[in-house]
Length: 77
Image (cartoon, rainbow, N blue to C red; front, side, top):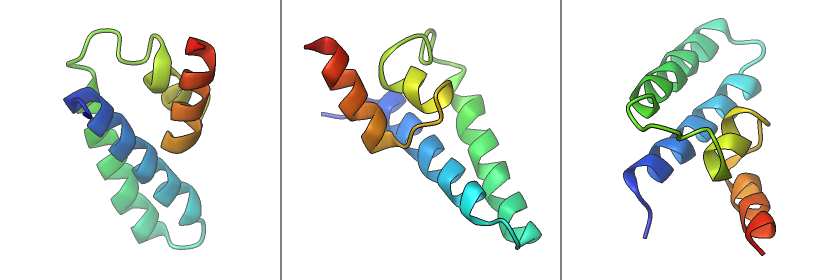
């Protein structure tokens, strides 16, 4: 089961990928940057969302969501 914070982390990571892929199109990049900022704002309501686990790897390490999940699972073993 995915929690609300996990869903927002996933959406934040997806939006950041879109921002990174929109190198030449400024309007497209600004659009996704706004969405990414919105998800980040919502995440701030969850204490410690980026302190460890998936949120840490997505926000601080810049990983995509799947990489962050794999890294989290690896560190839990």
